[in-house]
Length: 230
Image (cartoon, rainbow, N blue to C red):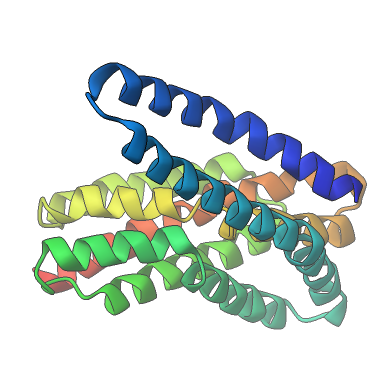
């Protein structure tokens, strides 16, 4: 019950200012705004209820699941097994991310099917999964995250010289949409689980590097897709 109250408070704080601002603008700019205001209010209520249910599901189910999986995998004693399942989980949670699907649909629509949404989702998912595995390997091997980030961004900017210009903004947007409400909580929870087993509580800060690395993977993956399309 406390979780529901906390989520409700967060939703009101996040959505109410937007609702008030939009209604105020409609009252100022439109001659007969009552129908538009009613339509917007109904939509805002539906969004609030849906987002509330989603956040409850994330807090009750997704976060504990990610932490349990993250803490269990390292205890299996196989680095390859840990990396393999981290890769698969990264792909699965990215494919389920609503923001990724919205971006893929818009790009498919704008390009008239030239860039297939299914292909784009697949590349973004593999990019996230691969770099989640790299993030897990970094924690296991004790590699500083700054080294991995520097190498990754050098690769991004080097690869951008060979990518068609229209793929560059798509690549960076692909990295942005993977930081959505489905992907980020699971990645952080998985990272917390892994680091708590491998390095103890003192190294839990390493889990936050998972998101930073996971957002680079789609950028590189979509750039590689651009090279293929070129």
